[in-house]
Structure formats: C-alpha cells, structure tokens
Length: 128
View 1 (tube, rainbow, N blue to C red):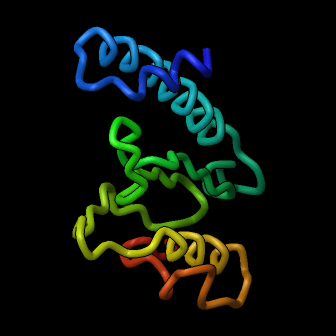
View 2 (view 1 turned 180 degrees about the horizontal axis):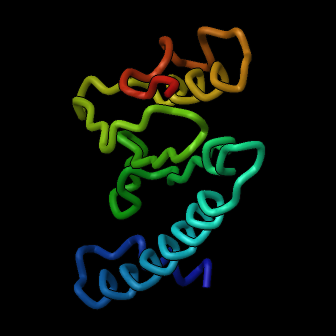
C-alpha cells in the first residue's frame, strides 16, 4: 500500500490517480479524527487528554507531485494552545517550520528561543 500511495502522489493531475489518492487521504483523516475524538473524550485530572497532548500531523512535501518541500501543510491539535483555525502565511516569505517546533518545545517547558533554522516562535499559536 505504501508503494502504491507514493506512486499516486506523482499523479500528474490524472483524474483516476487523484480519485484514488483522495480515498487514501480520506481514510487517513478519518483515523486522525478518531484519535483526536478519543483524546478529547477522555478526561484526566480535570482536563481532556487532547488538552494535555500535542498532536502534529503533516507531510514532508508541500506538493509531492512537484517534489516541492516548501509551504508544508501541517495540523496542530491540542496541547493547550489557543487554536486560531487556519493560519495561512505568505507563500514566498513564510516562517521556517522550526518556528513551530520552538513553540511546541516552549509549551513543554523548555526554555529555548531557537531550533535548527528557526527564527523564533510561530505567530498565531500562543498558549491558551
């Protein structure tokens, strides 16, 4: 299945490949929704497990079809952040992805202000 999925990501905009890829990605997001729902539905110490857990879901390609690794789509759930919904940034002057990691590491209590090529924290993802 993994090899098959990788082949489909190089779809060349062929409708039949895109339809198959949509089925796979729909199943992946259904599994993610199940995980998030389970975390949200489980209480521990007066909070949900989703409040106490950071979930990062993403991909290493912005467009696998073009082998582009810029403007990566990532989803962050839980972890005590004030989630603002979709955060869309300038596609040409975007924040480095390590800024997200700095925000996450700070939320875990690490006193750092840089990670890898990061320039600080991610704007729009502040603690709740």
